[in-house]
Image (cartoon, rainbow, N blue to C red; front, side, top):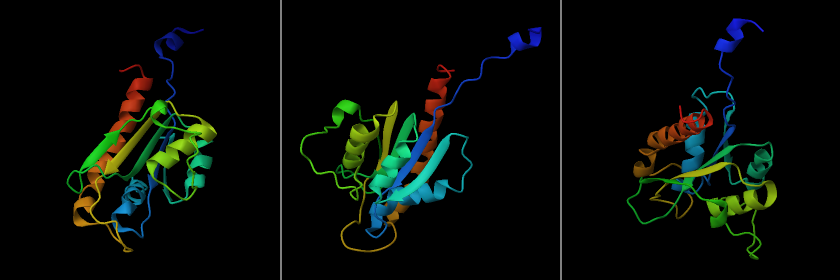
Length: 176
């Protein structure tokens, strides 16, 4: 073995990351996750980061997860009582998600709880799961386009997703 080989650190395998934009674009702010994913497609992502807009296709998300991801980042809306456009980063644990409780799992329902029940029961739990969510303003009634408050939060949400990916990469490198 030559001396130069000792000077090269072992390559660190970075985590495979799935960013999943979910929601119904026909219900105004419910299309937030889809819009975040759509805009992220125009950005350069490192190898191993996949961004998909799943809309209301719950089974498609589960099938994609079966390909084996280390990190799942769901992007959606979440009503928590704050001002419209408020962003949340939620890190659920497997214990937070109840399966086998008799709850119906509608493959077309894309709320994070349903998605995570599918994930836990069908393909196991990735090493890390995050939800980047936005407080909606307008989701009642059919309509296209995000409300002004939610629209203003899209770029900040992309920043939170990118920050979560960078943090996962740092953790894989041992915190360096």
